[in-house]
Amino acid sequence: MILVTGGAGFIGSNFVLDWLATGDEPVVNLDLLTYAGNPANLASLKDDSRHTFVHGDIANADLLDKLLAQHQPRAVIHFAAESHVDRSIHGPEAFVQTNVVGSLRLLEAVRKYWKGMNAEAAAAFRFLHVSTDEVYGSLEKDAPAFSETHPYEPNSPYSASKAASDHLVRAYHHTYGLPTLTTNCSNNYGPYHFPEKLIPLCIHNALTGKPLPIYGDGQQIRDWLYVSDHCSAIRRVLEAGTVGQTYNVGGWNEKANLDVVRTLCTALDELQPRADGQSYAQQITFVADRPGHDRRYAIDASKLERELGWRPAETFETGIAKTVRWYLQHQAWVDNVTSGAYRDWIGQHYGD
Ligand code: NAD
Ligand code: TYD
Image 1 (tube, rainbow, N blue to C red):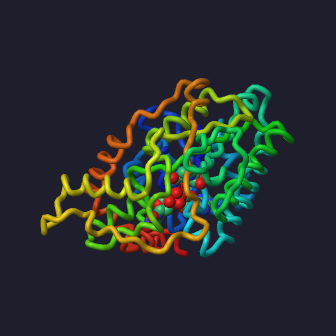
Image 2 (image 1 turned 180 degrees about the vertical axis):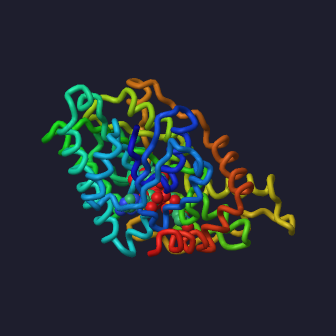
């Protein structure tokens, strides 16, 4: 079986759902259920004995020792993190606690567990660390896309904390020989994306008649990757990646934020037109820029294609169409998240 951390969040829950849809290997899912973790994402697995959910913190060393001893995973896929740049600007400490200290505790527990495995199991074991392209910093307009050897130049507390965790993973491979893999991925979008991030926020605000906030001039560029493509990339790296290596994962879709939001508006205009017949683009509103806002990210994912034969299946157009349709069909999920009802449920369920 595999152990996934952060499997109730956006990418982690998509990964767990895809994993169990494409195979039968059981998953233990360790998640603290912070504001970003939502058990409703995993509702379809309620009666699925292949999925074991554990409510807990990756920084809890005793819990990690117990879980590893009990379940004996052949791999750990590490998604758990504080992930929102804007929140990291307001409160960096939680990012250091989970992304740095939590990752260190996880690595340490896994190292001890791995050391105790028999030689064959230890050789086959993998620790896959899920990271971000934001660790590489910001690119000039015409600079080549980030390759795996691009220098680390993180600019936000979020990316600095992710960079620190990447360095720890690297060190655990070089110092202790732990069989690690690292993936650095571009901006994901798709189902179960928490509506604080650009794409789900704008879909939600559009449908509820609120402004669509564009930071600064809206010309910041991101590379967009449909989340199920990210999941297939992780499965491929886990299966065939070379230990100690890093793989960049991207969608070959560089877009300016304003163009992303305009594309969303066009899709919504077609699928659920405004009552007054006007375009949702009327709701676009320019607001103050994010402090230290990175201008451009772009991923060169050619190593993953060349060495492991992976390419994204979705274009930006097909991925956005699927995403908008998913949000329109899952308004109850959005209402549950935005009303805070799921937080109440977690409080009732876990007592604290
Ligand atoms: P998310 O914020 O949606 O989910 C994070 C999950 O981790 C939540 O379920 C949360 O409850 C859990 N968690 C947080 N702290 C924890 C702790 N101390 N112990 C256990 N669980 C904890 O994040 P996401 O967007 O799904 O991102 C997943 C991973 O992918 C992160 O490591 C992130 O840095 C990375 N990443 C994300 C993107 C993106 O576009 N979203 C892009 C590149 C890389
Ligand atoms: P976000 O989804 O927060 O992801 P990240 O900061 O990890 O790239 O933001 C994506 C881009 O959209 C980023 O350039 C900031 C911008 N943005 C806005 O313009 N308005 C918003 O309301 C949000 C949340 C983001």
